Image 1 (cartoon, helix red, strand yellow):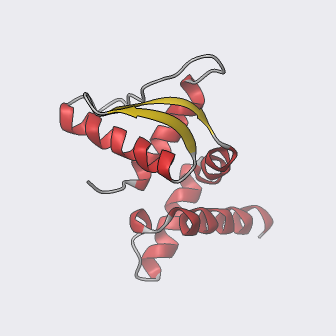
Image 2 (cartoon, rainbow, N blue to C red):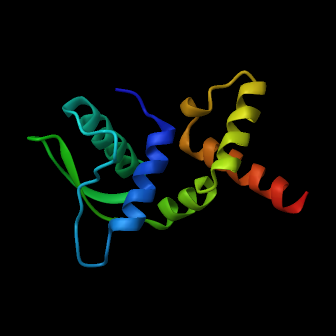
Image 3 (tube, helix red, strand yellow):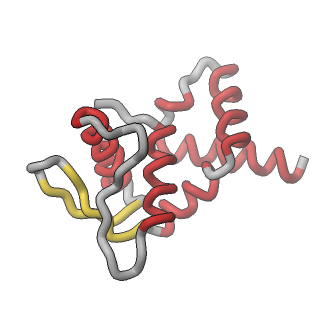
Length: 123
């Protein structure tokens, strides 16, 4: 399976919108209802957990994770990636440099998003 940065952003948005201080959730993204699609979503959840962006506990059968919360780093990344205009511009910047935005490491992706946001806001 591959990391899908667009899906990662959708997962973080889902967690932010659906998680509370007292519940654990399983992330379910609209349009990803089939078994393979659900596994792809759960794989992104696993990657986010491994990167320290969320706290989650996994079970193997079925392959799913119970998300407890988003960490500070997760919120920081989501704030950088929240605006679709910014994300699309960051994708264009990466493309001009011969890079695939969706394959960049998390920290580089976040840095690029922050840089594009700064340029947009501050000129």
